Image (cartoon, rainbow, N blue to C red):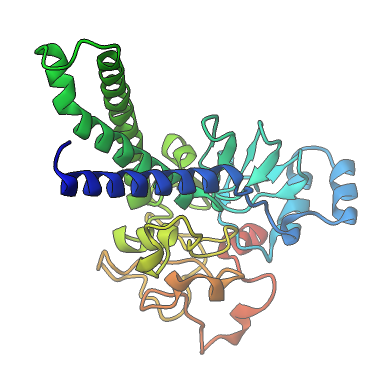
Length: 322
């Protein structure tokens, strides 16, 4: 490059993309995955009771009693409470046990060998930014190297060993760009649908049955759940995701007609697709800004008894009644 202005622009763009790529990659690697809080762990007495009870209905009854005040709405394929024998805890929604890390990870997406870490609630935003900046970095290198790559084939470069470096650099950047664009596009689709990789392959099971869109709140809210409300932090690898990773708002489409009624203030007969139905309020409503607008959880002013312990989860209430 002979133009000084072009040189300055390319140097600034290159180092900016490189810095953001390294920063997001570092955060993805060294951010520890979040594990379920203590309230999801069984007490010593409950563990002893589980050990004495054989697998079956009695075993599930112990888990139902332990989970009656917890904000869990997903079940196993057989409709049982999701319990981890290795960690001895009741799994929160979207939590899975990683066989590599040997522990339960909140909102686990997958275990990534490229970052030697589990991608989950604590670092999913960093992982997305890592994919985005690495893609932009490779595209920038391929674009700036293209003219010299063309000259290589038209014998427009000096006959030195450096021209083979140019060819290799272009091929490497182009191939990584193709693979990264596919992976980044797939995860953008997952964010738009509020799904994890595991949920894309196996839809979550609720009390009313399997629902592949059970956690989807609409494109805007799905984006905010990962990136947060403050747009100034969206492009920075700074944690800004909403919630605590243990409880998530749900959109119960195809709701079980025998399910307990929705909280007061929500019109269950409304046909407006924007009026999502939600189950009862989770334990940490104050930590999720998604629940503070017009489609938020609502307290029933006519029936104060619904806020009592043991009644916070309609799915579990229904199970106890049956």
